[in-house]
Length: 263
Image (cartoon, rainbow, N blue to C red; front, side, top):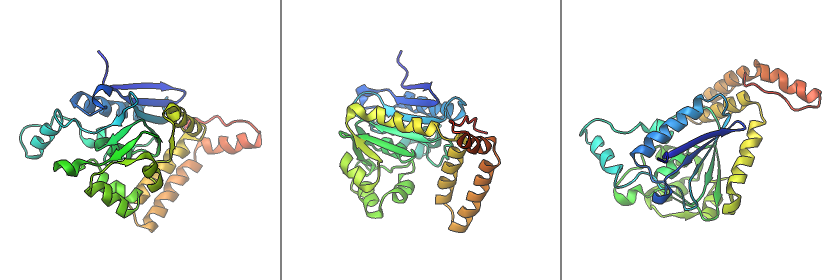
């Protein structure tokens, strides 16, 4: 039996693959549980320094919740009818979860609804030329509840965010690049190489520094400037007190590659 989400680690890069291509990688109940478990596993895996997330096939990254299998249960739970059936969205779609490791997304096709909501929780995003992006919940009388109304206006211009949220139209990869939603657009055949190339470069950097820089940025977005500066100093001091902060300059002086251990 094929697992709905595949997880593998190689060369310090964990790959999470949403594997339901016959349904455009829509999130049905097994997928929701599998995705939650994969994120948890990558976070706890000491062998994984960076995470790459993508969808199986060449048609879709993820088109969000399965409207037939998932949404009816979700609306029923929202009305207080019955017990919760699914993992919470902090685990599955990284809503209000400060994920400690950098996440690189390889968007291979449609990235819609919950797929785009999950994308907004990633750090670096590369899209194929055939990718499309949309938050279409409003078209079906629903609400993008996995963080988009909070994250999207912080990541792209306000009017662009409101257009995506309130109109519900799809935008193509070139438009997503222009508005700053993704880092780059490449040919579909080059997509994974591009994503892994960036991930490999990150694994060459100090892992503790990488994690603390990400934490400082994400925490700081929700703080007044003075509080964010204080938090930056606290997190930066942890890095400067680490063994990696000794090894990096030493390797530079000795003209060799550093050997980092994340502590």
